[in-house]
Length: 90
Image (cartoon, rainbow, N blue to C red):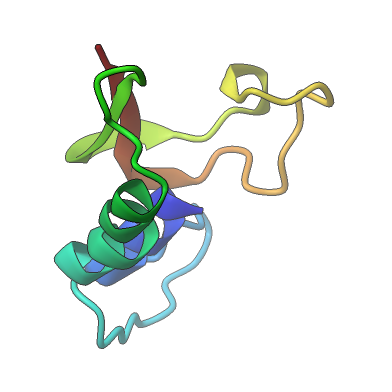
C-alpha cells in the first residue's frame, strides 16, 4: 500500500498501461507521517528491543508477486512501477 500511495503523491500513476492524470493533496511526507511515522510512535516500534523499520521514498521498483511476503505469490499490482521501499534496519 505504501509504495502505491507514495507513487501517486509524487505525481505518477503506477499502472503500466495508464496515462491517467494524477491529483493528490497529500505530499509524500504526509503519507509517511500518517502511515508510518505515527504508527511507529504509537506502537513504540524502533525501541531498543525491536528492529527499526524505515522507508526510503527514493527507491523505484516494479511489483512482482514472487518478491512479496505472501503465500499466494501473486498480486493484482503485478508489473506496476512504484516508488518507495520499506527497509528494516537493525
